[in-house]
Length: 353
Image (cartoon, one colour):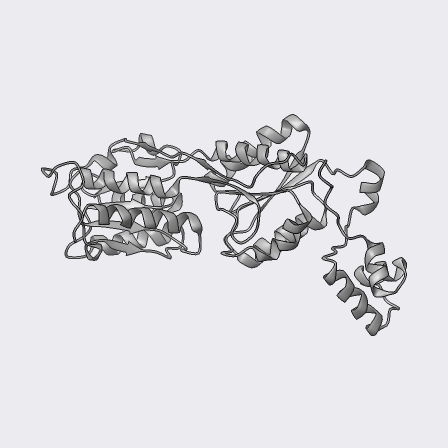
C-alpha cells in the first residue's frame, strides 16, 4: 500500500525552529510580539520544510483528511476552449461529489504560480492545471510529496506529473497539407505567444509540412506574438496590403481565427484567401464560406485529466503518462478555396536536397 504523501505540520516547523507551536502560528499569521530573529528562524524553517499555512486546518480536522475539492487552473475561463475543458472536468468530478474551484491565469507566469500556491495552501485534494511556464520547477516539492497534479492542454516540463494534450503537431500538419493540396504555396502562419507549448507545436507542424513539400520557408509568412483577436485582425489587414499577399492562412488559435475572419470579411476577401483555423468556434459553420478547422476535443481532455487525477488521489499505482487526444480536420469551404497551383499533383513532391 503506497504511503500517503507527508505534508509538513506546524509542529514540524516548531521543532526545527526550536520554538513553540503558538510562536509559529503567530509568525505565520503576521501577529505582533515576536522578535525579528525568531520570526526569521520560523520562516526559514517553514521554507526548508516547504510548509504552507493551511487556512482551513481546523475544518479539515473536523471533517477528515479530504476537502472534496480540487483546483482547476485554465488560461482563461471565458475562452470557449477552456470552458469546454472545465465542463469535462466537472462532468467527472460531479459523480464523486467533488467541487471544482476554477481560476484563470491569463498567460501570466507569476499569476500561474500564485494560483497554484493558493490551491495547495487550501489543501485541495488535487490540482489540474494549464501552464504557461516553460519550466515548472516550482512544483518539484509537490512532486516529491506525491501531490495529485495533472497537466492539461500543455505538458509537464521538468516535473514528474501526468499530462493530457491534443495532437497539436499532427493537426497543424494536416491543416498545412490541406492548403498545399488545394494549390497554395504562399502560406501565412498567424499565431500568438511562442512561450506556449501548443503554439510552438502547431508552428513546428506547419513548417515541417512545408519542408516535406519542398516549399521554401522564405515563401511563407511567419507571424507570431500576435495579441488577441484585434491583433490578428490588424496583422491580416497588413498582409493583404502587400504586393504579393498570401493566398492561404493558417490561424493557429481560436482567437487568431476570429481576428483573421474579421479582416477577410472586412476586405471582402473571404472567397479569395483560403483559411484553415486551429480550434472550432461556435457558428463558424454558418458563415459563407463555412470555416475549415482543425477541431480539438477539449471536453474529452477535461474528462481524461479528471479521471487521471482521481486515480492519483486514490494512490492507484500508475506509470507517468502523457495522454493524447486526436484532432480532426473539418472541411467547410474556406480551406478548399483553390490556389494558383491547383493543377499540381495532390501528393507531396520529393524533398529538396
